[in-house]
Length: 140
Picture 1 (cartoon, rainbow, N blue to C red):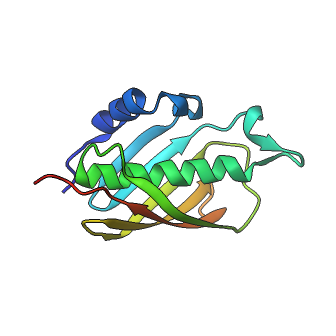
Picture 2: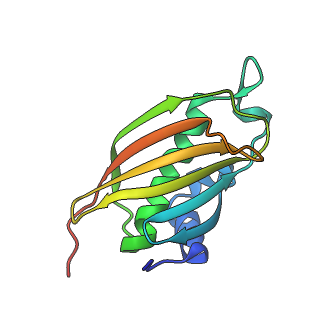
């Protein structure tokens, strides 16, 4: 069961990571080893050709995995990305981007997640991502 809900996670990110405020992320849902995150897309996130930039999709995926992990383990600011690989599958639309995260492994020191990124209104993912996070030792 998640130990942090959507509101607690949103407040934690605003307090600990104010630099991501510009992404305007909304945590729509968290569950057991799961998160769904929305990011509105505007002109600042587009690249030539009128598509969402790779760095924008990377940021959404990375933060979304972090959210899914924190939902399960609580507010651990020093959990960090150790690897992230992204496969771009198709050109995203210009609407909101949605990230669907499933944690594949949640151990004491490592977490591995898979993310599918979607353009709002489409059932076909625009990118598939795998990410590994290092979790610092916790005092029990």
